[in-house]
Image 1: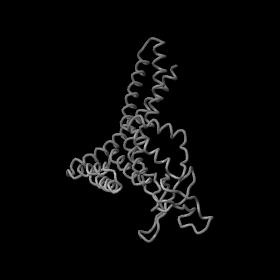
Image 2: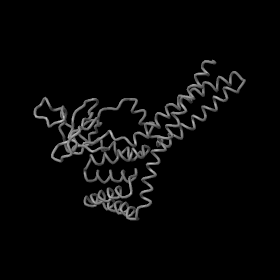
Image 3: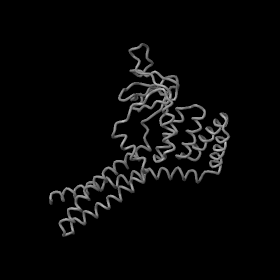
Image 4: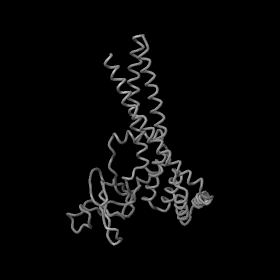
Length: 288
């Protein structure tokens, strides 16, 4: 039992920096959000009126009004910064004018700021059901982490991990100072179980905070685009990789360094349809 006790203490000591790191990551994410909020506080009231005007245009319900709402929402984002609510509204407006790719992009952005919003998630799933290409299923580990992130924000998970860590320390103290053998066993095994839960909470915290700032995913914004096996327009069938349609999600691997010349087409290596890598025209996608 003493060896188990030593392992428990070592795990607590080893985990403490991870808990602090998770808290720091979440606080950095919160600071970024506060910075955006501060920018809206110091901005003139024009930003708030833009958002209100966009809402009013959206509620009028004609295609022209939806286009006006899109313009005003984008202008409000440029002036005041982003928020989950405005991305959600913008996604709805884009969907109303049949711009599925733009709707998906904005729903994705909204979920990165607020992964707990089930309305946004439901709308995203509905729009994804309308696109042509079938998206590859995520690995089970990604699905579990994603479902965990729906429960709390990054800050919420940071609080959970810290609270559990404090409880683990209390159980460790109980194990050390308690003389009753049965209670010592209880403190040890419950503390060990909570420590494992805490490790998982830290992992979810870091993943949730990182997801909010992820710049490696993009959405196809053109009707269709032919991917190539090399960073050049395919000239024959052997150089063609796959055909992707509007709304498909790809993972950005790297961007080919090209001269700063608008006449030169830029190519980005992406991962699509599972683990298939190919090159795509940079103009055909938009980073989430």
